Image (cartoon, rainbow, N blue to C red):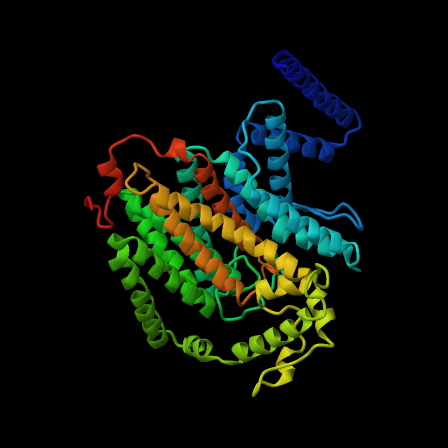
Length: 487
């Protein structure tokens, strides 16, 4: 068997370069320079992907928010476009599977979590057959759910040691820093670099960065703030720790200027959760929300047009609108409680027109004109019914449960990343609470980022025997304090 696989590898290694060389020869002889460039770039990309698929995923993590605007190849009517994200994720998935087939990489077994993801995706795909906008809805399904699920699988199987974990956290710190800087610059100057001409945000006078709305921008920064804060806690004195400190200040400022109450509240609760489970960080995690409150007051007093912050903070219209949408959504669910009305961009809008209801004291008109319920879990239930919602919640439950089990298992053991489990719970708090007021069908990077981090955590869970080493337990249980002195 081994000799057969070795022979197959040798044949592939000989045939692949010959095919590429033949294509290049044909393109040169026909003076098709654009095609030649595409072939060379594609060959280089797959070579890099083959050598280090994890490095490509980290590049995606950093570049995706801005590159997806520009790298999009249309394949014609009825066929989903090729985007930077789809190309990277599909390419990495293919390479990892091929490496597994040829015994070049060992994969962890497919867990119940991945099986549930497959069942959820299969259910959504089956309902697409009955939709009118098949291509558009398929692209939404790919970007919003299937790509994040594949990223979960890739991160779980590619992150195998301490260096891989730290590399992902460092990439997140860099991404969070530049995204925060872009959003703050855009907030004060209306100049939004890296986005194409004609780009329009749906939220004026709020920091959105390269995203269409402020909620995704603030949510992404909240996730990256928490992962970077954990990275910061691992550092001792030095320039690197100082850089991370200023990166954290930048990110939390970006969260503030997103003017998103759901993000503010969820980040506050996430900080409280960290303080409860990790007492040595309690002082910082309690002071952080107070700092944000003080900073907001200073901005209101010093910036001429900062009255918008006060208005946004006290605005009740969006709350009433959401309550009307929730009432309508729940009434719509009753029509098809098990399988829903099918996955689609306008599934909620089409199904809810005959089910408009509201709550006492809230005008019914507030539920009109919006084609999503602004609640991820209610939206899933409208589209895929109780079965789809059950599968979806089970995915979150499984991931959080296994991280909790590892946290309990590693007590009094030499496990460097035990606190990372707590920060992952905090990140999950941000995601789940924001899911109560937004729809992830439009939050592709936000959802992908969460499942990438969740996959990293599950990779640690799967390889716990390797991560929990027999080293100095005193050092592990007493990591550096936030001041740089041993805690």
